[in-house]
Image 1 (cartoon, rainbow, N blue to C red):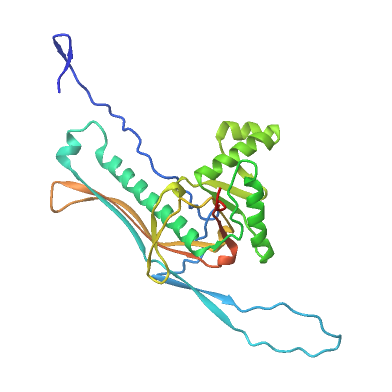
Image 2 (image 1 turned 135 degrees about the vertical axis):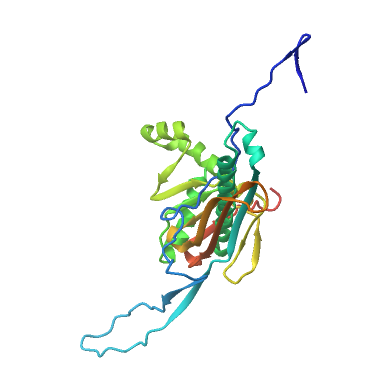
Amino acid sequence: MAIMYNAQNVDESYSDKLEANLYYGSVMVPGVTCNDDFVRGPGGGIYVHKLTTGTATPGKPGTDFTDEETSDSLIQIVMNNCFQKSKKIYNVQAAACGIDLKDANLAAAQAEVREGWCLSGLACLATEGTAAADTTVATANNCIELVIDVRKEIVTAKGTADVVMCSPAFYALVLKYAGKEFQPSANDRIRSSGNVGTYLGMTWIEANGMATTSAKYYNYGGTLKTVDLSGIDFMVYNHETLSVVSNIDMARLVDSEMFNGCKAQVEQNTGYRVRNATLARIHKGVASAGT
């Protein structure tokens, strides 16, 4: 459609800058929010040994040892979640655009795969973790207390927790609490960045993907799980127990033999597993009847 200034047609132009697309945050970070240590050579699945243990009890001095034969169980991690994106770019399209159409499509494909990859990790954590005993509805006044109580469930079960994965709604409550209660030096940092960061010995992450109503992943048994994340307030866990293991992570621009152009292709194949559900607690606030 022509652009008119009074009776005069004026020129049109296209920017060489792209408008940024929006994606859910990349919250699966090996060594921080998940673990990827169990990759060993080629294969589509990994078995992790877990020794059978028991607490020693006191006896009288001079007692003979009682032998216990070694035994274990196996925890399976299967790389059965394949994320793929392939975008076609005709050379005539690339030649007619002022933007780098090929690189832009490759970057978009990488972001789309990364988004799905992270959502599946959240879905695994929410499904294979343990529901927290506490179901109190979160407020700005009790949000920190709720996290401490859920953390206590893990500690009481002999574990430790180092990550709080928060929904956007719960994270907003934490920021409101932090604005009132944190010391001035921390206050300034929170006000400027909106990031709680490390507090109470744990890393606090805002996972905006937890606002979605549907996230999917294939579990270690090959069953496709569809998970509603929107009702979860937060997930407290030890990052070592969440295995996110990939055996292929590929991004490429490849010329096509079928048309004059190329394809921007990304593929990542990953297995997800909460290896010990005791170390991951999922909090959902439930309002009392009549409230």
